[in-house]
Picture 1: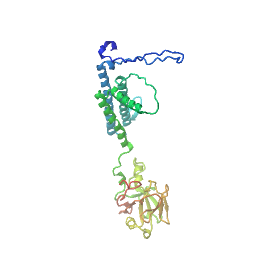
Picture 2: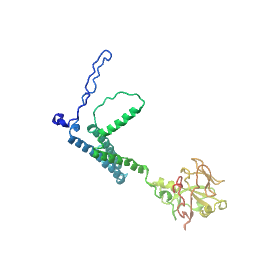
Picture 3: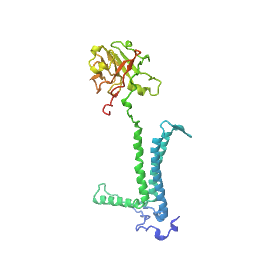
Picture 4: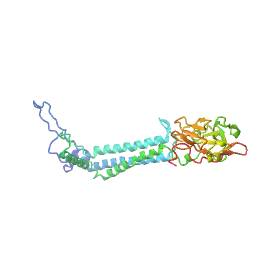
Length: 352
């Protein structure tokens, strides 16, 4: 539809000052100023039906953005993180990553496309020449800025085009939820996993080096041995996660040298079992001083007295090492009598 097909009463009024005025060149100003070209009216400026179609198109884009954001959240919740699909020509890719990227891309693109279409078809596109002014903002300048802002808000038709306004607000409200939902991907909630290990009543203590159950006679006074729970094998898919909580230091002391009453009660013939995981930042403790009964963490030199409840005597660790209560079964093998009474490792105490 051209402007010739529109009745004259629907055409916008002409401005008093023509844009196409050309300043004549003279000796002082040898270059003529052509001014702004004549303004060409868009179809939306002269036909309300065309403006309505543009309004519906912008609202549709904003609505698609809202649906895509909802699809993003649904994909994150519903699609298993290890599921893969074949997408030609990409090949086999992670289904969740593909769905998240596609839905978030559509949500952001349609917001941008809707804003661009809105600006190009419904907002005022008339060029206005403005004289340069001083940098400082005087009273008149501030008043003009406020007036320009009000004029821009009026020309944006956001007050009159309620469908666009409402769908835009809906899209802008929903799309930040994508970032909020992604925060959950920092890791699954730990639940009570940090409070429990594989140790339980009746679990045998297995030597980490020989992979054989341990008897009291296998442990000499002053020796240090590392143990794991019965049934935990290195080829298990969760071995690293479990051994990081369940690794033990087995030390045999003279019963008379044990100062802590509970440590003596939870030991067997001077054999004590402590967590190997330092309570500072979780490093494995592997250094033992036989004469002083001190265990040293090699990372930050936290030192624990294994003859006195594994209390911290030096270094940044804030808590003693958890002790595992042990005994001997009917076959003469060392076994756990329960799980650790307190969480293993660092930084859990303040959370628990």
